[in-house]
Length: 304
Ligand SMILES: [Zn+2]
Image 1 (cartoon, rainbow, N blue to C red):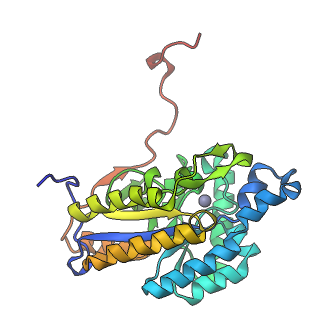
Image 2: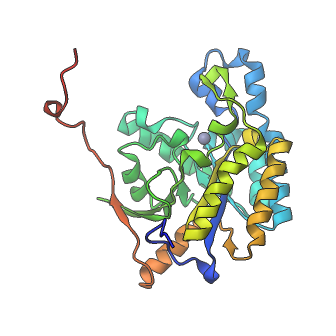
């Protein structure tokens, strides 16, 4: 048999693969970040971003039916503005991870501003949930050269922003290490569905069956090879009724295999630390950042 994944970790209970559904609850942070002055006039665009108020309870209902607990990533500004959604998520025992303060793009900010927003989000999450966040996902995957250092400095257990591998692995920095739980664009719902002229993002909208065909093909190889399957989705995108109905059918098919693990990302990261510590698995390690400064211009052709 072809070993599509060379170093799959042993999953708990002899499971063949791990399946995690993660939702990033961005609500209308994006509109203020990109169009602060125009935002009050962009009422229709704001209305579809605020569809999260309808969609999050529907996702929580689905998780109750499936009897699973999962991870949500939340810009802290959105938590402050929609506290009733935070309460509902916590009441059902789900995890809330750090997703920036107002969905800021970390790789477009000076280092001191990155740290200020990063810390402001930690403080908000701690105040609203009673605990510091254990995990982080950079908004729009915009992990900067300073982000790994911040994660180590503030004691994060894991990150889920990179596209480094098919299974979780370790990231080392000068200040310590954390678990990376990698995703990739084919498992994100924006390329499948999002038609958003105000953000310059206009994909051809796919049917739920077409989108799930992409997700299902990723599952088949993860199941065969012992990998990780992780959706990176958004309530206002994937929790419209037809789309969430297709997702429920897909997750039920996965569960029917009988040997699939449905953890939160914190549970995955804790498991990775455990099997590393007890010697039952040697994870891949990478060192970040890849580059501390631009490469020497002598390696590149001169600009005309
Ligand atoms: Zn986001």
